Image (cartoon, rainbow, N blue to C red; front, side, top):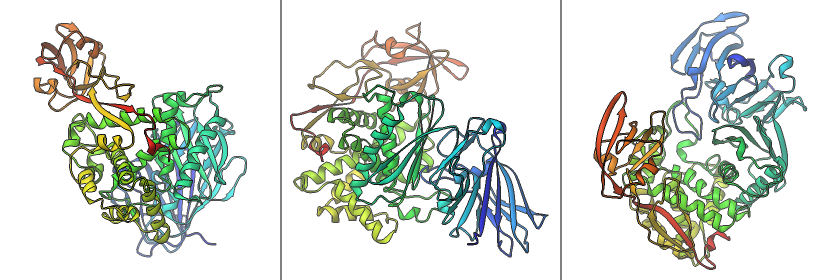
Length: 594
């Protein structure tokens, strides 16, 4: 079979972080072939302009140089040629994230959207890529891992030729290379592989056992068979890193090395729980957004923003199921899950943006607001991840209450999946709500109007009560109090607060965010100010400094704004009731059992 577009990618210079790509278009357009690099990557809704990392770009045909004309920031057109067109270019890759590409002397990683130019007119044509290892003895032990379909690949190392049905598939299988470790397992009969790169010591067999439970529960939720023949987890572990990005048969993950399970430890610490939740989230996306997706993403236009009001359904619902999966598959108990839920509720309650932006608006403006946050973001936006997860919870509990537990959100997800299996089409902006009503037999219009198109709080207290969980909001007892499960609900005196979020600074305490209506904002403080003294005493720990005062007292505060020392008289306020307490009643939390 003649493949019309071929690529070869090589780690040209690990020390300079350069991949070299050679692209061949067998039958270029007669008027001059146009090539483009995506401006963003599906799943991460921000224009990233990957083309800015192309360092050099040349074209040739039959051994002769071919002129290239740049059309815009990520597109080029070659002069007309009679035979094959070959483009050779270098890409700078030093983005330690799941969204781009990375190369150094220890590992290489890339998403195809960062490195593979698309030949206009051939988006739907088959293509192949030869992936080569770096040269030199220092790289003799490097291996390659990817979910791309193999064509002619070395069994031991994984380097070789891979094929994709079209450009969209080519860029939807990230690649990891280096001296990594791997562990394999089967979930519902489907081979899965977990690749871990970076320096670490961990019990990978336990990781595989736990992740297998997650995978099997989610496969069975939607119904066998799984929508892929093989699945690969690509995890890089380091220090102070975190993130994930879903793909059709794999996911790219970042986590702290200390979050991995250790040999002999049978508990699930907070770090390992965070990692399992991330894995659960990205795996759930195999159904919810990689296949079942908004019509606005069908197909993706990778040259510009693709707006939809449905991100709450694809990210928020996924965020609901990521932790729900952990309790449903038996990795954590109900109390641990409710503690996570209380933290999510507290996080949403603490943002004044929930009073100003609806979930549909949050989804639509992800490109310009959620992915471009600043010091005012808590005051101006609401997260379609966290509030979206709470909307999914509220919908689940409402369906269960109104149907006498005969129906649930699970039925909605299965109905949506069956719809995709039947037609493979993206969802129109109003279709998710319509299918939810059809799947449950309920009139859900009032709920969706409130949850998605208004800034009225979700009716969580009454819905949780219907499932045997009592919810109350109370003042936080300290900066580390994010809410949780309690044995009894009790009133406690509120401490004095400034109404800020902060971080340590060499000079004192930096105010990262100044919250709407808080004492700091009313006194004139701003995000970015560095507090150096409170009541004429140096500040190192803001919470401890404020503990000496009571709400209603006025204190003198000194802060630097850029290089200017400023003085503020601050009337301290009582901590607001924005921290969730959940009380589990006997035989409660019934929705967590099935």
